[in-house]
Image (tube, rainbow, N blue to C red):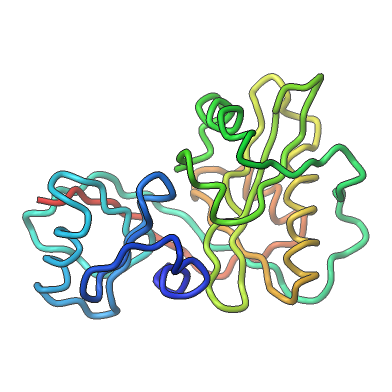
Length: 222
């Protein structure tokens, strides 16, 4: 995450000392160095403000004891094995997939509220390209790009409205994003909660492979 904040997403970042986080409304992800000391945690607390959420993603470093734990979630990181996009994947802009712009944010937020894919805020779409599927004009599925460490792009916010599930929209959207990411010479990756066995099966069916387990953790600043 720090590689995204200090690299491709530097224009969306806030920094104090070695601590860095996204601008308000983009994401709550925060990053410190690999071996942060007390001053670095103090810098992050000052950067975020009192009582704010520090989503440390998969950072193994532990903040000081006066930082309140908010959540712990076991998950896994999955990666595209490399090479070009296989022909068997569904997707592409010719199969009902549309690009979602700033004018689609209210619809995106409404879909997220109903489908609960994970963190998504009013400015999250600024992290990269977001694609969607509409049914009779209503946005019923979407997926997009999030973290961008060098040479990689994360696929995130994959979700489908409850009434539209089972139609293959998620597979269509993920494969369309894979095609775009591979075309610009990067490798797709994604994160998924370990309990979300349906999503894991979907991603494995599309060709993603598990790279490593990840523990997601969030804390509230003192």
